[in-house]
Length: 343
Ligand SMILES: NC(=O)c1ccc[n+]([C@@H]2O[C@H](COP(=O)([O-])OP(=O)(O)OC[C@H]3O[C@@H](n4cnc5c(N)ncnc54)[C@H](OP(=O)(O)O)[C@@H]3O)[C@@H](O)[C@H]2O)c1
Image 1: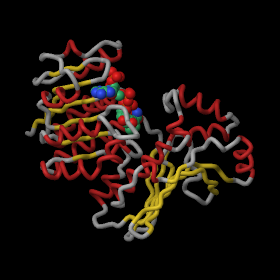
Image 2: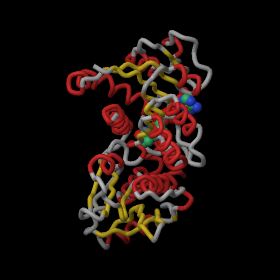
Image 3: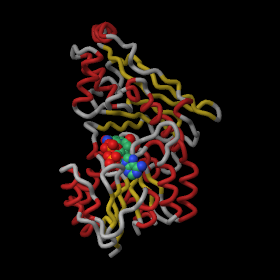
Image 4: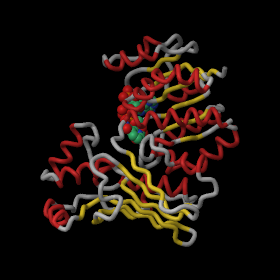
């Protein structure tokens, strides 16, 4: 029975949700997939790190994080001096990279993933930065080492988007897509329809952990633009930087706009679109009025949706309700299984 050593770089909301899911699914992995695992390394930025070639006790690691304590006491080896030292000494076959996203350069996650691939590890991430800044390089590196670079959770959390095309739509040619890819703005617009102001709706999203202290990445459309760039790069083969996506956020939408739309049975949505144009792709994130005939109309709160137009099927739609760290963790978990079973 194959046994895998896993390393978790980043142990915040997503890393901890992944640890809980691994614990919950361990028996199933053994009985249904004939594989076992242990976690030989966990690293954070400010909460310490642990290395144990015999496997770290995951329940204990989760308890320490909950208590706000450091992980160092779980280490049976000198604590790594930085992320690169951690990756090198983890002895893992799979690295999960879940550090915060850097929209400008994708770093240091790009270098973390590169190092893992160079050492012959599968590299799996929920971090969008490396996909939009270094996809081709990381994919080629993975190919040359006979391992996988997977990133299902970077768009629509655990919902199958990249694996949908990779595993189940062979030779399908993606012509265009359209969707709602940012949960925070969709929640804000939904709350404004219920009578809240923009500021109240933002505050609500911050309260439930959907929006960050500085919500501009969401409300100005950057997060959506990064996702559009990732989909274009990976699924359409056209490398697009987030800056190349035409972008407008939702700040100009007023409560009056919302009320006027509702009076006509329409809704404002932050809509992402991409369409092939010659050798390139024209991509856009902008508020649009959608009417009741559109599948985007009923997508409320933090739910997201994407519709794909291919050369082989009619419009294909994926909707994901109620995303969060647990669904993101499932995307990483699925990537792990798909990676180790594909080689
Ligand atoms: N939350 C979601 O549902 C979701 C959905 C899709 C994608 N993602 C992506 O998943 C990634 C993780 O998100 P999250 O919500 O788990 O973030 P988070 O709660 O802020 O956790 C980030 C983790 O990375 C650690 N870290 C920061 N810099 C590091 C470094 N240089 N080396 C090692 N560890 C470092 C942090 O440690 P300290 O806290 O000790 O500093 C923390 O453990 C992000 O890229 C995010 O965009 C998240």
